Image (cartoon, rainbow, N blue to C red; front, side, top):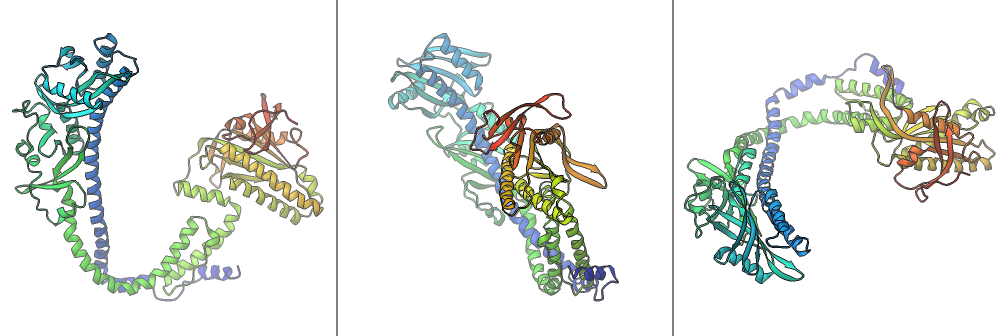
Length: 625
């Protein structure tokens, strides 16, 4: 404190002598301005290169994940329909076979999953009852599959294993396409009565994944094993030359040249090798054009693994990396020269600026008690800045005595420099008041009264803040605080109750000490209420408060006044709460019902409760004492 007047005089007097930092920077760093810029660019480019590669990997993952998720949704929704029907049959809810209930059940399942072509029950005699999708709608299937070798084989495999089965793709001439197929045993009373079988369209699967091409600008595909194409945009409307013996086109001769070249030997360049750190990525070169192929294996939905993938021109992914490569090399070379020449001058100015920055950051966070005065500097501008900062720091330390420091810190943390808008909030409001304080003052000097109030308000503030409360104001010997703003708390009512009980314990401890010392004993009235109020910055341009305004505030004040005659008036702290606060509690507290009272200034009556214990108690009403 003794040094502050000198600092203020120094800061407000004539400018300090010494070399100008502006001149020093102009003369010392002017020659290196281009190299310094290049150095900064080099750091940015190196970071940009890594970020670009990371972003490319993330984009690749997003593309593949989207297609895998689309495929899983397509297949699993069909499987879930079969499993649901199996469950209905097993529980006896529906009788499998040509009954109206069963036909209605599988008709609904077919309508909910457009990828399913047919859904049928095959009994032990290979008689089929089901529904199939046709161009004009759906049709009933009542037939024998004894002559249908493919479907009969799948049904026999399920009967033998008594386990669900995803079979190899089947060519179905009646639908002119290959189909995925899933079969599950139908069991009733531990006896296998047949098989629930479904055929799933590969053409619709091709249409489904083709939608990703529009979304991501890539070309989606699914391979059956490594050598067959299961789904591709070219298969959406059929593909010539497919038969029962050749249900899927060969990958090596497929109409898409990228697909047909996937497994050929790779010759990636430097940039492409930087992408090879990601699994499931390959490069295909067709003449002067290159493509990046991204893929992932998917098991368990056919008798072989499926390869779900997509490809796109490599220039789409690698163009940014190509542009960065030579710029990075050039900037690295330039940065070595500029870093060596600028190191000395930079060091001379770095430390004072760093100290100023650290001090300003603590001021921004309102941590003034941790800020130390800045020392002087060799450079005139930095020395003047240090003196100005020290002067500002002295003024702020006086200022913080008159503002709620903890509230300011929380508002800065939550809202930064954007300010805060007033809004409706559900909060808990507390008012405290010292009973008979006027009579206590008659026997005290002004310094003694101020010391007593300061000690009392310090205790109240600590109890409020330990439960995350916001102190609104000190008014005479009263305090107003609230919970639920600026930070929202689901247990704002519980926090208010815990704070009130903590205040009660602290006031009892302090009064016990005062009784032994024959000092003044304080009795406290506390009123609390919850409700939806306006919370925000309210006031004039010259003076503004972060406060709460509304009915709950008025009720809390009236409850504190009611504590003069209602409740445990003889105890060191009499805590009254409203029925709205009781309803807002998350955990149980011990509350005594003190009746329904008419509060001052209000026409309706209010149920009043006395808060006695913490969360180990109960919220049930008890007669007041």
